[in-house]
Image (cartoon, rainbow, N blue to C red; front, side, top):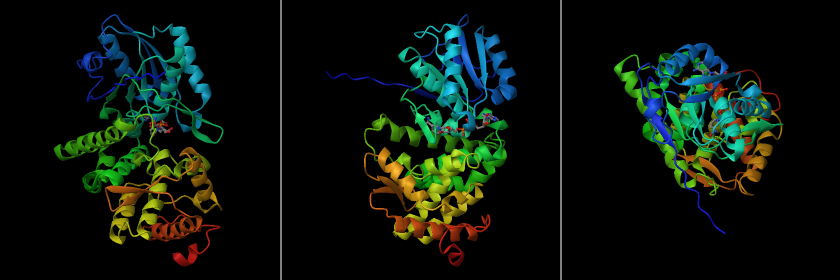
Length: 394
Ligand SMILES: NC(=O)c1ccc[n+]([C@@H]2O[C@H](COP(=O)([O-])OP(=O)(O)OC[C@H]3O[C@@H](n4cnc5c(N)ncnc54)[C@H](O)[C@@H]3O)[C@@H](O)[C@H]2O)c1
């Protein structure tokens, strides 16, 4: 037999979502109306609850929505199965009506991934709504359809494809996010720029560091325009890539750029590197690979590495110096991509192509060149044990 499942979800730009008089959450998405008298289970990142919980609770009260709040500590170090069962227990206790009572998830990528996974498993699929509160959440974790938790050494090893009914994108949450996590989100935006949009790259060069300082709050008209354009363009580019290949049947995905070596790097470096930081190290390495192959000019490579540095993102981690780390990471990715590398590599700035012929020797040469480059940018974090020739290259 053959059956087709139609998928539709909404990504709604929603500034001031929890301003008392905003009606976006109530009627901004036709597929998930919220009316006075309704009740909802709201799972919220406990940090977000501390920082924004009061205004969120006040909002629901004001609109006559009865809310059961489940604050959960949610960060990478606890992104495990136990957290999923915590949400499932709360759904059980709440006695969710899975036809009419979508769970509302408010938090960063970890919280959204965990609630998404729990909701997709509960009674084989319960609707949920995402309200991202980190930049990674706004432009990435809140936009796609993947859910997941880590298992063993495997990053997001357990997960499902489960679109939320809607995501409400509200930059005001970023006002309390620290610079490191803002840069972490800018890494995913940079990814989209590098493979798809020279224009977005230019915006990041002009405004990226300023937006970190301003926490994307638009305190001047120029910063407001830049923040809005950068966030919406990143989301738009991401959706454009996801839509024709939502279930990832085609394994050549340019949005996998920066995600070939980074899953291993991130897990090996835990808790040193955040997700976007590991992605940046991968992108720095593949920028150098692109330069060595003649697809990226020296000048372009320098611009890319310099922007990473200005966005306070790392070009390097000492994990890279562990023997065989990249070969192992590539082998793992090849397994994941049905036996081929399908490695997206940059072509200039804003374009890409896929290759299948990266060798251990080429990776080692790229590592040495990257090590030299990061030292030139001043990202010198001490001698790199085990990297043959690193000293000379520097
Ligand atoms: N499903 C997907 O398609 C997808 C895409 C990208 C990333 N992800 C996942 O997202 C995760 C990373 O997400 P993240 O970077 O949001 O990390 P995170 O969820 O761990 O949040 C980062 C930290 O910020 C805190 N926080 C959240 N919102 C805040 C706010 N408004 N103010 C102050 N602090 C706040 C959190 O408590 C946490 O300590 C990774 O696990 C990654 O695998 C998933």
